[in-house]
Image (cartoon, chains in turn cyan, blue):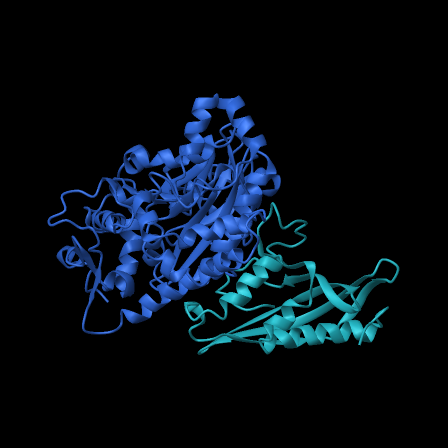
Length: 162
Length: 440
C-alpha cells in the first residue's frame, strides 16, 4: 500500500510498528525503515544542539546501525551470549508538526522501555521524536531522536535500541 | 572483617612477581584498605582546569571515597576543597559543575558561608557561639583544603596524604604523554568539552585499569564489533572513501604481531603506555588545515615529532587514563569492591579545527559509551572475571606473560603484548598498601 499524504493515524501506526519491530528483534525490517540519510540519535545532555562536536549516547548513521545489527548475529558477541530482550510501552503518538508540501512530519511519543538480560532488568523512560517523510510511497525515518530521561546518569550497558 | 588490616605480611602475600591473589579484586576489606592507603597516598586525578575557567567556577569529584570540590579562587588559583560543611558535614555543592553564586560557598542547610579558599566568611547568629569553644574547634578552620594539589597542562591532581612522593617524583617521565596531548594544540592548550559519558561498571576498578594496556584482548573481545565493521567495509567498492568510523574500528582487529610491535613503556609507580612505536591511531586520515596550523606554530620538524607520536592508552595509576593521539580521557572512580564508575571526556585542542574534536567525540562514543558495542564486550569480560574468581581450584590470577625469572625491574620499553604493565601496577599497589603510615 503506497501513501501519498499520510493521515495522522498512519503516522501513529508507523511509530507503534517501529517499536514492535525492535521488541521482536526484526532488525532487518527495522533498518529498512530508515531513509538513506537516516539518523538514530540519543543526545547526552538536554538541549544538545549537535552530535558532531558534542558526545551523544547514540549518533548512528545507517552504516553504524548496520554494524550493530550484524554484530548481534555474530556468535562472538560475548555481551550477548545471554541475549538481551527489550519491551517498549508507548504513550499515544502525537503529531507535533506536519508539512505536506515539504513532506516533513514530526511525531512525539513518550515511552517506557525495559531491557532485560538474565536476572537483570533495567527500566528507562523518555520521549521519542520521529522525523518522518514519505519516500517511494512509504513512510521512513529521517531522524529518530530519543530524549532519555536519565541521560546524564551513570548508566549500565544499554545493548539494544530504544 | 579485619583479616588484612593489621597484617602487612598478609597483604604482601597477595602479590607475587608473576600473579596476584583473587582477594585483590574480590575482598571488601582489601577494597577498604585500598581507599585508605593506596588511593590516599597516590596523586589522584580531580579534574581539568579548563572546567573552571573563571573565579568561582567549580567542579565536584571524588578522591577515593572522599567528595571534593575543584574551585577557582578570586586569585585565579585552582584549589581542591573537601566537599563538607565545617558545621554538620553537609556537602556544600551537589551539582557536577557550575559557578558559586556571589563568588562564595554557602551551605544549603544552615547557611554558613565560606570564601573560595575554604575559610569561614559568615555564620548566622554568630554571637550564639560566644564562649562555646567553637573558635578552638575544627569547625572554625572552615572547609578543609587539600594541601597537596598539583596542576600539569591543566590536569589537576590531589594527594590526600600529607606524606608521600612529590607530584614530579610520582609521575616522572610519564608526564610526557600529557605534554604530547597538549602540544597537539597549536597554542599548547587543552579544553575539556563535549560532555561526560558516565558508564557504571559492575566490576573491581583494577580490571578496568589493567585492560587499558592489555593488547591481547582486542582481537578476541572486539572481533564481533570491529570485525563486523571490517567485514561490512570489505563489501564496499575499493575506491569508496573510508568513513571515519571505519578508520577508528578497523585497527581493533589488528594482528597479534601488530600489537606486539606497538610496544609498551612502563614507568615507576604503576604508570605505563602502549603505542611506543606506532598504534591503532597511526593511520587516521590527514587533516591538512590542522597540520598547517601545527607547522606554523612549531615549525615543520617539531610539528612532525609531536604528531608522529601515536601513544594509545597512558595509565596514570590508579585514577586516570588518557589517549593523547585522539584526545580522550577516562577517569576511574571506585565505589565498592565490585562497582566502579568510568567517566569519559573529550578534549578540544585549542586553536585546532573542529574536525579534531569531531574525531574525539566519535571515538569516545564508539568505544567508551554505555551504548558502545566495544564497551559492552569489555565490561562483559570484567564482570565475568568478578564472578568467575569465586570459583575454587585456583585462587591466583596469572600475569606471567613475558615475565622473566626473578624479573629485576619492570621499568623500560617492552614488547606490546607483555603483561609487564600489570606487574608494574601491582608493584605500585603493594607499595601503596604497605608503606609506613604517614600523618593523615
